[in-house]
Length: 80
Image (cartoon, rainbow, N blue to C red; front, top):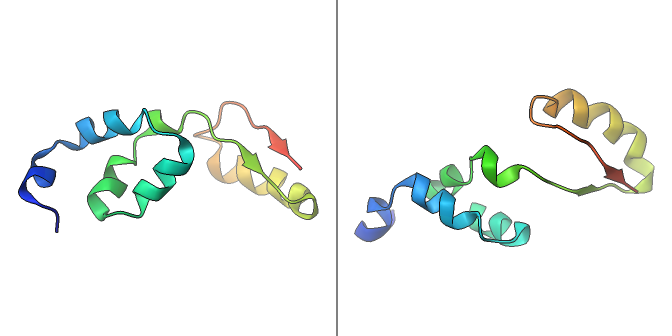
């Protein structure tokens, strides 16, 4: 459970603050608490994600990622 001031900040404001953080810090924030995890469940924070795939899994990744996440993806770049 967070402190009173943490619980009083709207999730929308927390999400807005998170927009200024680099991706690796967003990942760290995701593991802080359930409230921050909910604040990170904002599509605007994840408009661009780069995925690096081991060469052995490129074929599998090309099949799975677009199928599972096609509603969220505009452009897919897979780097091996």
